[in-house]
Image (tube, rainbow, N blue to C red; front, side, top):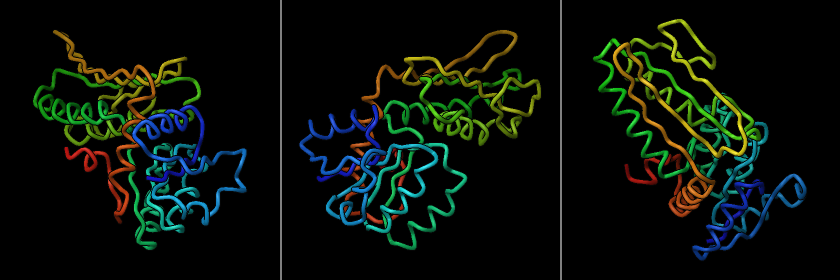
Length: 238
């Protein structure tokens, strides 16, 4: 498999290491330093692209992959206000996209656990639920895409909560997400159900970037030769 890496920061380098170890080839590494090489012609020499950049550049990067007809795995977060336009463009170009707020296999199992726990807790009004997420200071968006996914899962099943907010809240209808940026934390997400009697918590803590990078390579292997829009639940068969 020939891969184009769009974004060659710490995550891009971690993806490269895992991809090469699995026998794949990184044909191009596009970054801010070589934008002149980030062309449709070069993308078309690859089987798949993996995009980890920023909220500001992700949408245009995805559109270029769709135009090139190259399936793309996107790990950038913070751009989902443009989701409908990106989805329409992908479909119009008969292209392929895998998008996930988090590519870690452990986090995607954690998503399933979070959903199941929320279903159980909805019948117990004595507990108030809140979220906390901690990332390194280079993380550009807050709350994290992973925290938003977790919050949306909770809102689907905890009927007393109507919306999430990214600050401390005394409104019983608001789901509180507290975001902290502390180096060198790769990512910690906590969901806490608190009552006067006891607390219930589930926590996922990443120790390094390898879990995210490995999941992104797995998603790239999955999407080669496909058309349409996919998520990690489909990649992992959950």
